[in-house]
Length: 245
Length: 321
Image (cartoon, rainbow over all chains, first blue to last red; front, side):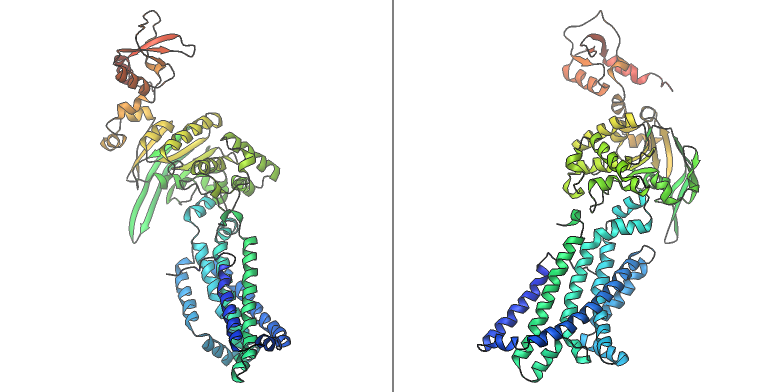
């Protein structure tokens, strides 16, 4: 059984990132006085690499949204739905491949650089969105679709006026989970030449330079946090008032 | 007018052919309420849903006002038929106003016209438009939602309505109230209504005609009075219940059965309005131990009296039809 990831309230989805951020900050503070200054020393790098990071996340994430939502919609259509579970199982198996292995596979046929990194991230982001779109649409009660049919809506009108609005909170939960996953995975994409804040993290580890590592990690957590809050706000604007709790 | 001609539905479940509705023939006159009645799985809901093709008929025809509906597209047909379902089915993402305007919008009515219609309909069921138009279904009580469900089906002024256990999800007290409201509305609107129920009391109260289904077959199609007086077979007799004579009392008013006598006023007898039904009259007779009731008109004049004998005689008069 596939379960949709429940929609979180504005902040609860961000709590994970907030706590990671706090842990990092405490971790940094434990070392020695002046760690913050040393982290801030990397600010120009953070801004430059953060831009790359954001670019990777946005390109792969938005592409995933553009593919996954129509895919979820398609799979939930009455004449397709009997095959949907197989497709979902396939996607599930895809999600069990370790991120590093996925990126390595992506590298093996796309080479190194932005493209394989974006592709790998795209695949990782795809599943939560497709799954939540599918599950959200399937969980619209039968009597609502029957009412829509009985009143003379065409299948497309039913989808746009009834099914989609009533599953939007579940779909948004999927998008938020996916983006949080995506931004948190981008640092690993550094390993196949994707750039991004992973450069600071991995270089920091290699050089045993904790402030450098922290600079990358804290910035990644901050980015994810900001993104989640923004998506939370967007969801409040988009989800019809009648179904917001 | 709705006419069903040899309407049949055969479901194919794992190779077994199950006949859910077997050559149903019936005709409901314009402005009448026909209640489809029977136990679960008898084919009443399938029959109802074949009329707006939520269930596609295997064979047979449906005529609305003489027109064969098989020439219409599904969506076109459904927009011409008001549809009320048991779960009400208001769309939670839309305001009450938008819910009521769904079919008018699908039909392309000008916005001003459909919104004015929504207001008018809310007024009709005594829900203040200024309070309710902009609310969402989740903010309404069950009874209020049920009323909106009914007026939504009336929005485009379709001459025909299909109602699938429309008052099934409401508590008994509110159900009585909504049934009464609905009958009052129907007196003015005169829609042709097919109404699925499994409750014989509701059927007797609402129906001009009752269609009793059993195992996919229409076993009796009669007025409530005929049905209760002359059940066609043991199944119908069992279904309407052994108290069918008592149920019939509700169908008649005191006026129908009383003896018009002005001179013999027995001062000690209890009084009852001529517009009350015989159930109330019988109840009063049993309760008061009196032999007769004085029947009064709206000006409190005694215009007749009623005894056990007269009630019994009235029930046993040969039927008019």
